[in-house]
View 1 (cartoon, one colour):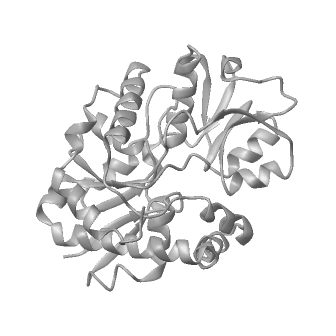
View 2: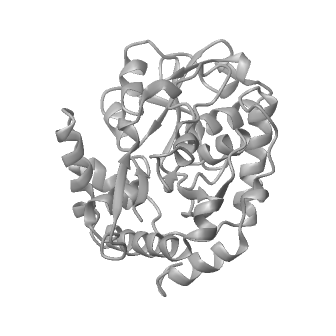
Length: 315
């Protein structure tokens, strides 16, 4: 059986694993699906809906069996009625990015965002960050003008005046910081833990436990290698940018990887509480078609599987 794994650079762990060959040592037939190459027909109006590409392709013929993303996509899938289950989470990534404006823009707090153009990689953790920040100051999604931007292009749009605020993430945020003075409107720390996470379909989990264990074990091994040599891991992101006609700074990628948690742990009650709060807000703001119970996506034995694959020294 061919095991299909969906990956893209924003989930650093799976992206590095794609280039190490560690999974292929455990599974004889692996196919890697680059999410950036999937059809763009899943684009939506960021004012009224969430993109469903990640969960749609998990359940489509010829899609993938396992995926790693940020905070929001599994909530989106559950809201679409997809029978997905959580596999595991990383530690908090609160230093990964934040909501910023230009220092001379006059936009000083989240309360100043009413009617403003806010750039986000819509459907990612950035959507959740902005929604939580708005809720904290009594605003709703309809009070802003959300603009779906690429994680890198958003910085140029902010500098060019096309956006009033932007959720930047490293290493791209470092490039913008080098060109202009920014003001932090909202830090991720204090809003939510913002982990990386991995999920699959219930059918795959129940019928392919050995394969799921192999994927998690390979990720643990690859993550340990990233921690041991972040410079080598950074090389994969730089090479990918070169192949796609772009450019990336190896020093900034190395710095970004050094500042992120690696290793997969079981989902926790604290994480699920955060997911539920985000799901409730997404539904209340019209971005999810139905309310969801995130704990319905928890399979207890998967936590034991993840815990069993963790290196002894992992914390």
